[in-house]
Amino acid sequence: MYKSQRLIRLIMLVNAKKNFTLRELADELGVSQRTISRDLIELGELGIPVYSVQGRGGGFRLLNERLLPAIAFTESEATALFFASQSLAYFGSVPFGKAAASALDKFYHYLPPDLKERISRLTGKMAIWSPRRSMSAECLEVLLQAVMIRSAATIVYQSGTSADERVIQPIGLYSDQGYWYCPAYCFTRKAYRLFRADRIRSAVLNEEVCCLDEVDEKTVFNWNEEELKKAPKTDFIVRLTPEGVRMLEGNGRLQPHIECEPDGSGRIGISIPRKDVAFFADMVWMLGPEAVIIEPPEAREWVNGRLAAMQRQYAESIPESESRQVTDIPKSQAP
Image 1: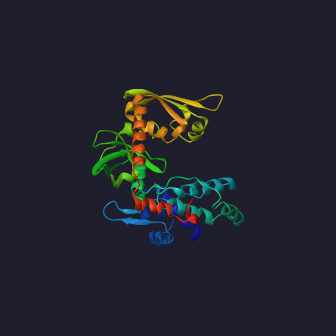
Image 2 (image 1 turned 135 degrees about the vertical axis):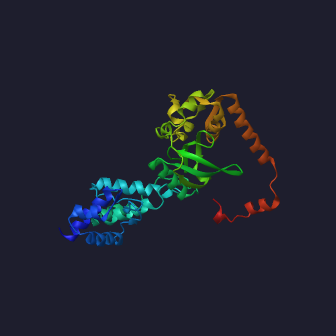
Image 3 (image 1 turned 90 degrees about the horizontal axis):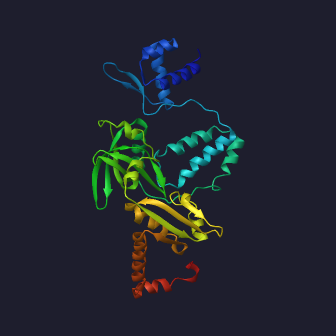
């Protein structure tokens, strides 16, 4: 067996095993243990992280991540992967740190020159906008890893003006309006909770806590289903102008419940938890005059409260110094 063939075979063997000894590899490849030892050193120089385990029952292990076998892609698949990776560029942080950019660099390196050129032409031509929020990529990585290896995590969570330590079993991650959210079972509170990732100050794996099977079976789509069924409900009814219907096209919570009229206007009629009235009223508030809340009364009161606060704010006189700053803007700088 040629050395190049042996090294390729060796890569496949170490990827398939969690741990191994020199004798096992030597017997498998039909060479001496000294030869295998030299080969492992070469793999390390090539960037394959093999490390030794000392003591009884020791041997060798592959550090952190195994290398995946080569996969053949069509040109359309290659383009799709490039765009999918580029679409993450507008997030403040992602759960896999710099891994996406590193994978894209490796992937791009092996593309045929003509396909490289065509894909390069997409740079700056396509984008998926997302509000850029500041949060810890390291914390996101820990949460994602906890889901993947079925582990609990210890986090420090900022809630209001205080930060406290929680032990959680993450269910998953999802992004909404640029924020990352982590639904999880909180062992500290003994209940399911939704954690906003930018409020997590630190996160480490906690493999000493025994994870719950029932939590592991939940997804980001149904994690609070049982709680929602038990929660007191109220009818949420909204009347929309045609422009209001259009403005809600990308709203995953309200858009599916819009009943459109022949003239383009619409109506929303759904049952929501009473504790979430302000949350839903706030979404309608963003539509301005393009929507009117009909029910419940407390949602209308919430909107009226915001209107009154804005009226008071604009009724106050602007300090002369600030007023001068506004009126003195050169025409070239005015919008």
